[in-house]
Image (cartoon, rainbow, N blue to C red):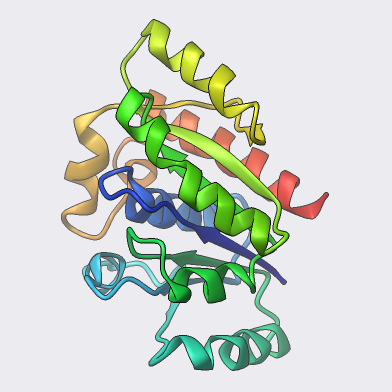
Length: 207
């Protein structure tokens, strides 16, 4: 079983959107045993999953972070292949403990100076936990020079996913009723980006 933790100290970078979309992408690409876990007290991923009509990805509730390791053991024994964990926008002991169970930490960031300055604390936590990490540029404007500059800056700290997720309203609109762009417009550019990102992240987590 592989566990992917999506983390960033900054809010508004798209952690929940990526968690849901990567979970659906995994299922559509043949990984049926995928479980999402929402560690954010705001419960956005939980609300999205509760609005879904589809049975996959599955969802597991965790009452406390102390019970997370036990739950993961149970999921592995049950034959689950992938677990994707959404986390709150903060740098706390909870995030540190959640990172401790990760095979890969995915750090989404928007390509802006403010977001890039904020990424350091999350990187420090991943390094302290001795965890592999990968940056995902999310919410990028099309053909914006700053996206390239952001990728170059982030590459000094770790791997940067070659797929950039661009800003499109369909990401938010699809999630309002428990779906993703993969289910609303399977042949669109947004779906193409998500599928490519999942392929990269899943392969990178196995290295």
